Image (cartoon, rainbow, N blue to C red; front, side):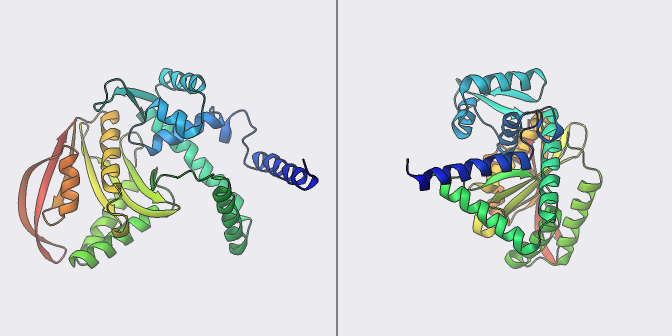
Length: 307
């Protein structure tokens, strides 16, 4: 081995030692939790997917099948993860977080965001940008040509609610001419969601690609047995990527795990793309009624899905 390469090897190893210590992954429990780094990553992956198989997790995370199996057995024993037979392939079991699993992940995700925010707050804006750029460069250089998913889902975080309100107002004005009363309605829904948020019964998902928000959806409690899908939005440049269907699937999976017997939603007849997504997901249109809202004459539609 030539000296130059040996020196670079030492430099990479030194950086690895520095960074693992800096972000606290050497502790017995990640982020002062009862979960190891690998266990927390498995929770993260399950939180981002509407349904996943153990083989997919092994492949995507590069984990030994036996090791993952032990993690999943522990999660099932603690009722953090549930299995369901795949309707597409009866030989496969789909894994999903239970309400307790989502609550556990939400705590980890919140603490992780807080720690990273503290790390970044010590730097000026320019240094923050250089740090993120350097990390992106490392990821790109070491990616080995592996392709990341075009987009992924995550729970809502700081700044997301303002984006939801802003983009609903802008997109629906640009595409359908709706006035500011629609943005006001979205703001009211979002404010109520935050004030009364129950992570075991409600959730918001943000679709994201490389840090850019592509869409959102909410699942809120309508009654003890009925959940309501609200505020489905897909940015114009993200349409055709399956974002809308993925957001709706996440709502349906969550609603089943949370114990709801039915999902409802209210939409408008002119929202053709959204209506197709609902229909393909199994929703049925129950009734419609004309109304004048948001500065327009509209036909409202009420849809339901029995779970």
